[in-house]
Length: 438
Ligand SMILES: Cc1cc2nc3c(=O)[nH]c(=O)nc-3n(C[C@H](O)[C@H](O)[C@H](O)COP(=O)(O)OP(=O)(O)OC[C@H]3O[C@@H](n4cnc5c(N)ncnc54)[C@H](O)[C@@H]3O)c2cc1C
Image 1 (cartoon, rainbow, N blue to C red):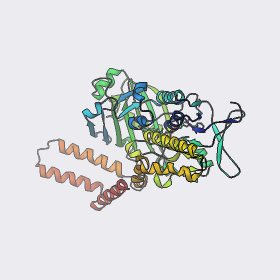
Image 2 (image 1 turned 30 degrees about the vertical axis):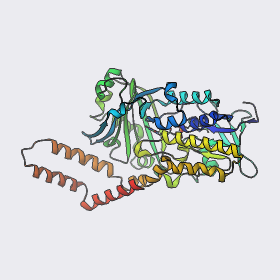
Image 3 (image 1 turned 120 degrees about the vertical axis):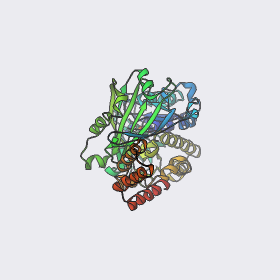
């Protein structure tokens, strides 16, 4: 890379946030460089993963004609509550999910991110891979004016830098936009495995009629040893994505290793039959920010905007992150375009980025669920207790014991009280309600 390269804008990181920002700016005619450390864009990235088309359509309205590498549309989705030997399923299937393009698709990030970056390149963005941004360049007044990279003579200049470096937000920290590393309470660690399976097995096991159907299941309870966390099982074209995620603090406190939790989950009597005969093709671990609205970094300073996981933009309850990242990336791009028109890259002008996010679902949802991590942290028994109770109650309810139903109902109530006192339950529900309402 020659020295003294100058652009209208620099984007750090080729995830959904960065590529959305680069695409938005390139389409308006700005000279943009997207710098990605991976061998190719997407090479280091993975997620659950369900991707939402509303956010993609806002960035790239004709995305469908450009044939994105989607795996399967999500035509059935819901929750499973696992006990050690059984499951209560709450699933939803609707004809509405069968529209094309669908509301959401499973994707494999190595393919999707590469395709998405190609669209940014087609729009005119310069995409540079195998290059890590190591530092931020500032003028004597402290305004951001570019970045340094690990290339020889690797300085790149621009009046605005969009930082979309993901959850390991070292540059955001260097800039002082967030005070310290995330404590283990506010970050989750997830492990995911992609297991290939014959298509006919996927379809018969999950009750799918063809390649235009797919399932996304989020699983609680015994999947994470009853601890705060979530697990997932999603169908891809020729395999399934399976994983578990828990707050880092829980792994440490309970002395369990992520890969052990995943191995145990895969071996659960309810889960095992779905994976039988499959071959492990991809395995990895990744952090998920649980920073929440109240602990987010500052989103803008002179000459710089922060988007996506780098700013903690995740709604774990609804397994949404890529759509928040894409929307934030697009809004960062739009703000950079406006800043170029006004020739004003000051923190004050760039604050319209924060205002736009506050008016959108991104920060509205984060604000609403701002207490969710604290709720799970202070109510660690919640998922385990109620998942086990639901399974035991269902067994009682659905089996005939030759006893009057009134007696059965009393037994079920008694089982609940054995696990949690009346006041304990009322307190849990009150706390949950408060966590859901923001
Ligand atoms: C196990 C798991 C399951 C998930 N499931 C879902 C799901 O089902 N649906 C959903 O919507 N979201 C899901 N998420 C969340 C989602 O993956 C993230 O919210 C989303 O990827 C954030 O996008 P981003 O662009 O901000 O960051 P990332 O996708 O992390 O991209 C950051 C990019 O920046 C690059 N980079 C980092 N530092 C530098 C540097 N210094 N120089 C150059 N490049 C750099 C990285 O290589 C990477 O390409 C899941 C996450 C995990 C871990």
